[in-house]
Length: 156
Image 1 (spheres, rainbow, N blue to C red):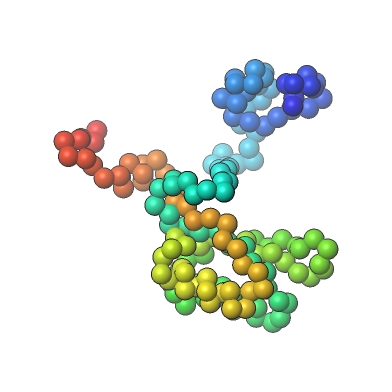
Image 2 (cartoon, rainbow, N blue to C red):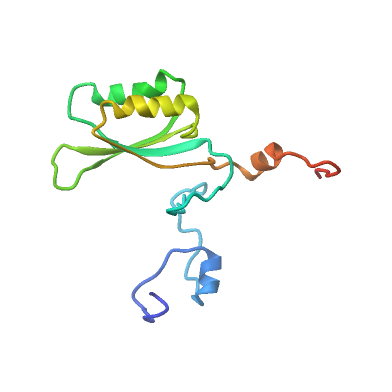
């Protein structure tokens, strides 16, 4: 849009590669707040696209407003020794005091313990949806170390 409309009052935050692809001039680099800033991107598809062995799952659910409701919801994972890596709440538009809870768990949706936790959560969550199950992000050195070495191949 910045390029197509030849905007001089607007800027885009993007990678250097994106600027090159779209023919844009870089005004400034390193605009992040923290040097170790990490941005996550999501790839969404109606069909399953294998990206590797899933070991993380994202879900969204709602709860009835009651004392201990969130504790009860999260306990279905704790009881099965499933680690939670993220929890966010967002208000439900037009429904005061109701929230959507976004949760990342360190398990694949198809893992038996995770599947059982989801069934348990569904017993008292009015709505529950799995957003996806995918491989968690790893440092490039972790990926290289965990990759199987093929016969005759060497690591340098």
